[in-house]
Length: 561
Image 1 (cartoon, rainbow, N blue to C red):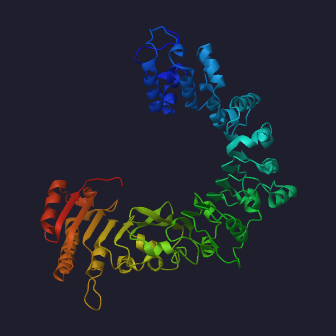
Image 2: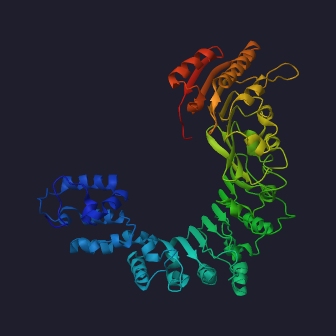
Image 3: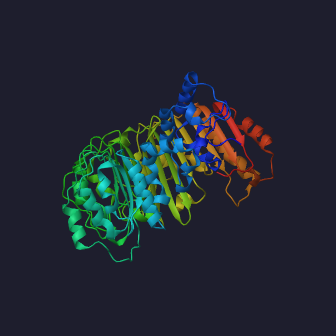
């Protein structure tokens, strides 16, 4: 077997000569492929063809080997087996600063969340910092007594991205480093190590004072993601494009002095923001006499935490009232139910009046009820709302939905109901008819999962002038999933299709017929007596053939969705 610094004729897997065979998956994930191979082919045209025993470093020019090394990105410390190559390669590798830049992101060097870095880890980190020469570096580090922010303070001028997992007692050290100035820093991400709501606050008063008064020279900062306990006013600057604040509900963050005024003051200093996420706001009264803050460049706004536990602390209505947003912004909200409202006050958002497609879901799951609303303009998602409650609401949820999203602009409406009884349990007393009346101009309607009786009762209704509801409707898609744990008998089953046929023919007789009707019947094994799917499909096609210009019918024995 030739030594690992040899190359076989025609072999292109150059990376395998740098790391052992067990790291082949790693090599496949690196950024070596096309550009490297093109360089190899170019080199072959100007260098002699090797024999099976020719050293590869004599075949490829050093510049190309350096380029190969620069494109390798091991994910674990034990994958850096540079001693497995010949001395000529090793010398080149040690001089390839680009190879060592990303090493400071490897968890086995900078510490895991459940294991702080050891002395050996710190030695590795210092070695990699030295070998990366004067290049900008990306650092991900779990702060510990052996690896504090002061450990990389001497190289702060070179840090391009800094991701920290940090406890409260090291906050002062972090801000001391930031005050020294980090001219190249583009991203700062602080993950506050959560110690529980019942844990006593650990921010000493001098640290709180430092956070409030410190100023930072971070002219290149574009991306800031930080919990409220670390939200220093001095971090706000006009260069920020992405800002995420909150997300931790430990005693320090919940007990921080951050209020709505604090947030608005911070945002006022960030006029170029394009992406804003406010995850939670602490248990503070959210009253402000300030005028709204304008964010003219904002393209994405997210309110509420990644889970509803953190969202319970946020006053979404107060935030919406105090922001002036562009018309084309995309909004994502995770909204916990309150006694006053189930849908946040979104009607005043300019984007709501521009939506042309809406998808509404009513879901009952794991003891709570959820309403999800997604809205589009063309193919771009602009509204993503999820709201949940744990008890029966004291108001009509459909009425709130219509008052918030009802529009003559919406042309495509989809309704998804998770199962029987959902309307009653979720306070949907207005039902389908009220929902449809809120969108009078729809041309396409899709209703999923629920028994379709109520839908076709609504479609049969007319105005005082005798005009059917949704008069412009041209395409209707209905998915009926027979309720789990029930048996549907033939007479009851076919009575539903009698109503469908009569309703659609009645609409057609008044000049409001469908161009396309799609019906999908799922879980037909619950139908008694049993009917084979193909036979049922043919019978349904015969029954519904005259209700639209095009009729599509499908029947399935069992579905998992």
